[in-house]
Image 1 (cartoon, rainbow, N blue to C red):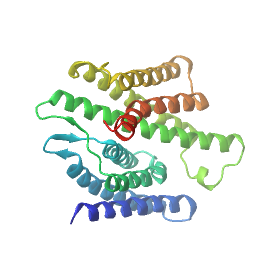
Image 2: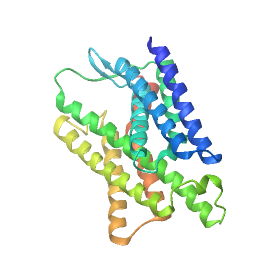
Image 3: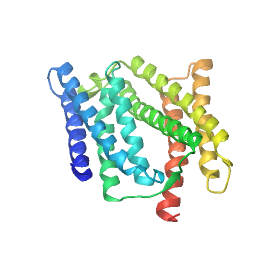
Length: 268
């Protein structure tokens, strides 16, 4: 089976899984059975997505993390983290938005092949830094989607309009607890990413890295202040949502913003 066929099958499985999760929220069905089937199909899509990434990202010269390859890698990892966590935690509703996003990123990866080699053989420390950075971005992206869903749920409950979709979500307190668990994990990974970057990159403030480094540090500060405010002052609700989405926006600018300008605009 060629890469195009594998990609097409993965996209179909992603969309079917997202559709099943949508039906589960809006129709009277066996929710446990539908959830299990959606997770199984989603994990199948992730496995195929990984097959495509292994061919497009891991090449002889090193890692090809061009813009669309990187976007596909992050969204695929987000889907994997979400589906794996959903086995034990009530997070599967996030898949309604995340799984189609992973499908779209996979489609773009195949439509617009990109080439940007950032890792050469023998640079194992940089390899670790890149892996941790991608993990951090993926976890915090899932947290941002969780925050957006939390905001919708909070607004509906404040307006006393808890529709079927909102009723199907976990209680507000559980949603908030899950949000801060993901933020804490993402913050720890982002801290490790900055540390390994300082250790293994010769000059993290060089001309082509200064924006990425500065914005990554700013995002780290935002998430750190949020966790401190939660512990010290009990920040929650809309305050937590605003800080989470702000940190996510800055972090995405740090990585994808700089890649967008350098690779697609300046073509470097």
